[in-house]
Image 1 (cartoon, helix red, strand yellow):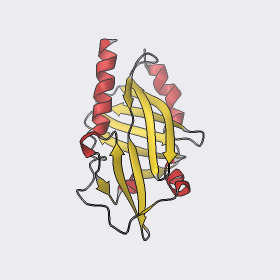
Image 2 (cartoon, helix red, strand yellow):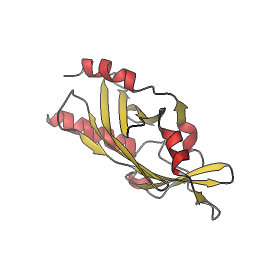
Image 3 (cartoon, rainbow, N blue to C red):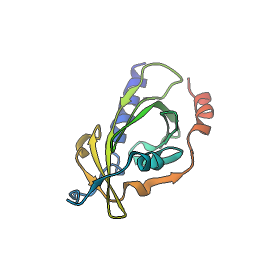
Image 4 (cartoon, rainbow, N blue to C red):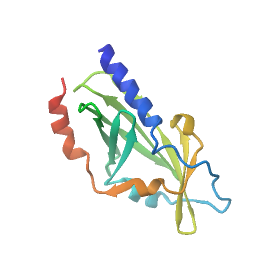
Length: 164
């Protein structure tokens, strides 16, 4: 149990320390306008994003019913999984998951938020909370990390079958 919690904490920290979260040290343009909730939902729902962490690749997908699912492909060949919920308040998208490296039991919480903006046709984001040292970081490229389609939910059962 202690090992599982340690690994789960390591996964959460890895996600917070992910280079994908490490946005450029730039400021949000003064002309930035909050992105519409419908547009933000289209970025996330039914799509997948992969964050490259020092422990492996964390893959997330978001469903229309407010769920978020994650699979961690660790560098040592092992797997971890996450599930939780997402919310959208104005232009701020938040999700909260629990990462586990066993089928059940206590895991490690991870709950980041990101606000989305437009500047003309360009899309900008700002890490608002839960992103560790990158809280407040701004990027004009984060949206490019999304790929069309759900590349996670179909892997949940096979990954769960490999865990104790």
